[in-house]
Length: 263
Image 1 (cartoon, rainbow, N blue to C red):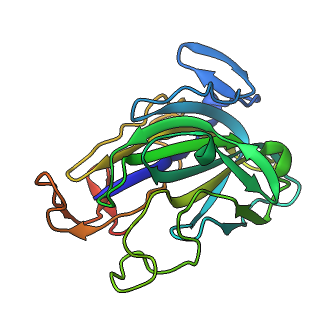
Image 2: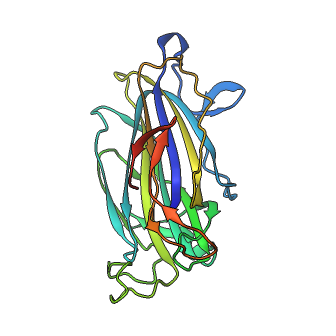
């Protein structure tokens, strides 16, 4: 069982003959690149493309689990010196009976922010109504490498106890349950190669094989280099937790090749 929390992001080095000097948001069929706008606040149906960047630079991403805590910190590293932050997005996912303002309102480095609701998925065997994903544009609050503190995320338990311990203080599972958060940063650096990056966002939950296709790249085939970053949560190996739903593992494949066996 796996609740896909927030996003999938793929980056590919673009061939020089296809290089664009500009950067920004790309709409299929439109090749005038512009700054990516914030999301429209409407729920996404599953997982869907969100933005396409072609830029001298790259991206970094990191996350933190917040189950039974409601808070945490994200350490960002790897942005080269002299870079400019182009866009920074914070994603988070909460198990609850339904979406609402309390799930969307959090603090980033002690400053209040409100996330856009980007989608809903099923309940990953925790007796909740489902999982609900949010995104906030925190570009103006992110300078580059460093530690970013997250507080105020909706969570019934906040002591950091083990949610699997049926004899512990955090049993039984009780809504709401903050799953975790991910910070994704796109940066410009004039000395870096041009990267073709597609951002996909949303949320989903599944017990059996599930596929997400990412396309729309402008890079030549074969690409010089390629990478994929996926963020997920609540991967489990469990028996039937209701309705005949049995989760047998946490394997992730890329083009049919296993690349990870955990979330």
